[in-house]
Amino acid sequence: MVLKAFFPTCCASADSGLLVGRWVPEQSSAVVLAVVHFPFIPIQVKELLAQVQQASRVGVAVLGTWCHRRQEPEESLGHFLEGLGAIFSHEPWLQLCRERGSKFWSCKATRRQVPTCPATSGEDQVMLVFYDQRKVLLSQLHPPAALPDRQAGDATASAVGLAAVFDTVARSEALFRSDRFDEGPVRLSHWQSEGVEASILVELAKWAAGPICLLLTCLLSLVSAASACRMFKLWPLSFVWSKLSTCEQLRHRLEQLTLVFSTQKAKNPTQLMRKANMLVSVLLDVALGLVLLSWLHRKDRIGQLADALIPVADHVAEELQHLLQWLMGAPAGLKMNRALDQVLGRFFLYHIHLWIGYIHLMSPFIECILWHVGLSACLGLTVALSILSDIIALLTFHIYCFYVYGARLYCLKIYGLSSLWRLFRGKKWNVLRQRVDSCSYDLDQLFIGTLLFTILVFLLPTTALYYLVFTLLRLLVVTVQGLIHLLVDLVNSLPLYSLGLRLCRPYRLAAGVKFRVLEHEAGSPLLLLMQINPLSYSRVVHTYRLPSCGCHPKHSWGSLCRKLFFGELIYPWRQRGDKQD
Image 1 (spheres, rainbow, N blue to C red):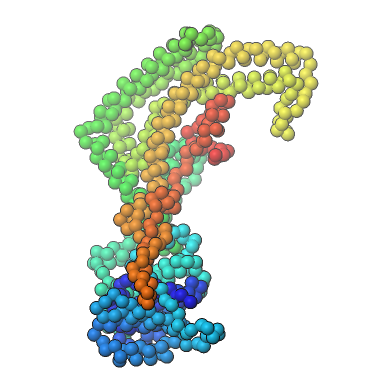
Image 2: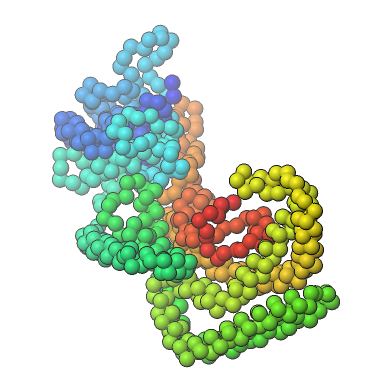
């Protein structure tokens, strides 16, 4: 039988002693966690292991002996180590030995029980696998579902494959609190054998983190209570706030900050990683916002934007007037219905005239508005971009009105033509059963239907042309707003902390392991080195991607083309009845 012994590389140069670790019977493997040095009292070693097992719920035991032949006499040390097997009984009993001044290792696993099969010997073959204990302790094996349940309470819970090694090392932190420099009765060698690093700043930050988080949690609770006031739930305010991107982004950031500064401890590494990603995302957002704020207030760029805004608005209105005058003539040589063409053209020209008057009326206050909008960048770049999206929506409100008027007229004629087409075929739409049923019509109904069908068919090209032009303008505005929302969602959902870990500490996010052969000679055990395979960047983004704001509609190309063909409105916000494709 071949046994696998996972041995930490930090203990390869440790003095002789006892091997402490966990035996995994399902995998026929032993995970060595530390080496207990001489001298020691056996009862004190057992008490320490019992305390570690109670704290970590890991079946830690003495697995065997470790002999590093550097200065000790071989015969006396060998007899002494053989006698330890009677005090610390474990099946199988490992005996690892490293020869002095060479790379030769001796690995044996003996059993004291009488083998049931006569052909079976009492000694097993051992495959020695070295692993970096610090990297395995700090890493998280993916997917997390492969790890045993840490709340199960049973240390002998079945583990699958190498997840048992990662889980054993991660849950044995209580064993690593003492090292060989402690004044206690038991001295250990493990990944912290050179002493525990400490910093005054880190300790002060740990002590101050609790009160600061409590204070910020109280402030955020007050802000949440103020935003949930009954006065803000009245119809006009609730409707406007639910449609503005700025309000949705502020609500999203408030939820993230409430979760980050919550005093509740993260239950698992996934929640801890999510909190860290949110905190880094908020800090980066605020930093970029401060950079934007400094750029805007430098060299009076806000005044320059305010001076350039009115000429741009006048130029857009002038271009729209030229476009409407072109539509009121013979656009592209098409013969339009002159009466309807003149009515629609004058109607839209009047709206443009009202819009120009509104812009010039607001011109004295534009610089002040832009100055206060620039101050909002201190809340984050995403808030500034959301305000920019809302400003674009307000400045192009006349284009949205044109699009709504044209879409409603076009949709009315399309549905009218479809109803009259069913009339010619002797059909009608059953509202109660939501289906098309047969129906008989008299001569007067057919005559009136024919007249209406003819009128709608001849008026459809004029309406369709206006609808097409204003839909293209509306799609242009929606595209600009969509790019802004895409940038906002990128900042909100990108797991920056996880990507930073993948770049600087790739072993922290483990996708698996690989083995490298160190030594394979006849008569000597097989020596392997276990190395961690990090997650790919795409899997890191997919696994730890944060939820976005989710207030913007997401249409597929099929649903978008269907809505455009039938004249259904494309809202810049998500409707309750919208189905996500």
